[in-house]
Image (cartoon, rainbow, N blue to C red; front, top):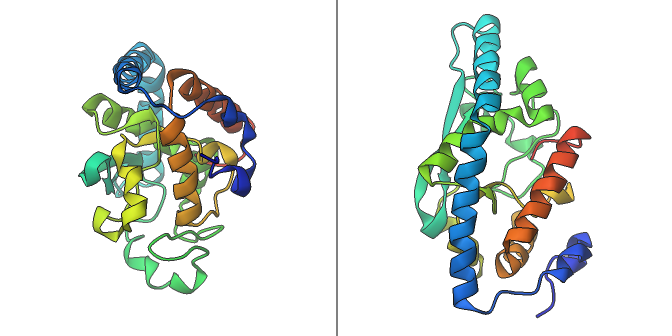
Length: 226
């Protein structure tokens, strides 16, 4: 089967990861993946807990009347909706303001993206630049809603998906994934789907590790939020 992301982003490095054919191999991988997720989150708790507390204090000092965290319903494995945790990076009425700024939307609805979005707060820009706004999603990993690596969960529900797109819902969504490390922030949903499906068909422990390393490198180089 041809790699569907080859023609769109040229990520030829994933060609070294052949599609998974054996059910036992996939089952073993899923067990390893869950154990790895939990181990990384728990072992790194002394690192991320103080950062979360410092950011929360900074946000309360700058905006005492606004919430620190932002909870948004996302679509996970099997189309199940769950609450995804993030630091709030936008003004409190950001969702209501979507209609006002709809003419600036750079993607096809239901995707919504504006370069230099006017709804983003000053501290929110810093959090997005460093990807620290995603840090509270360690809670979602502990709850089993998310993984370290996987397709990003969409804000729109499963009934918005077309039949061919539902393959994306066969896996647990992740904090980062193949699409994020390509730096294609303006990709349309269908293009992201092809990239996600390429990952789903080839996912393995070594590929996940490579995606994590590439994500870490991308964040350090400040090439944008993941």
